Image (cartoon, rainbow, N blue to C red; front, side, top):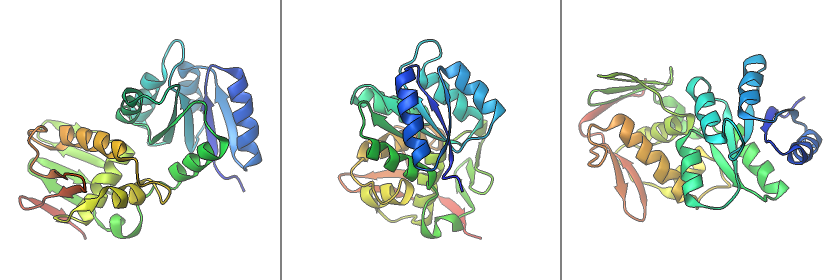
Length: 236
């Protein structure tokens, strides 16, 4: 049985060859693309479970490719960044990537990130929350859509998962480590920057004044809290 179907997108043929061999030996089905344009065409032709996407490519770059994929798909996406720069990491997560790995990367690190991304559903009772109302914003977790007074708002898969976990633990402080491990997996816990990016994006999408949030609150040095004093949630 296949461990999953992966599309590798990189303009470097050597990286594509090495990644194909590595992933196939781990039980994955692998296809590849040389550019963002080829990746979008491949995704139209075939279903995949995860995309490994190089950030820096000629033509349609990795960030724009990620945004276009995320516009109509919730497929897991791991970005490959050339340098360990915070701006690149923020940009990757902001575009909708689930995770990123910095080149040159260790094979075991990439495999661990791939496996984590393929098991990205939040653990435990997070799935019990079905709907959340935040002022004029209604979040339907079953349909994975958000409606506001201005129309439909699109959340990335990770934004949905973070918001759902906070909704289950509403009015309680959720530590950075707990939230990271619940949404990304047990191997995570120190990637606080991931949460900062996701929370900034969520506030832009569900708060009336993102710079002065009333629902998605930061507990400095500790974690985050979803304040539901003026909101409702439907667990059933």
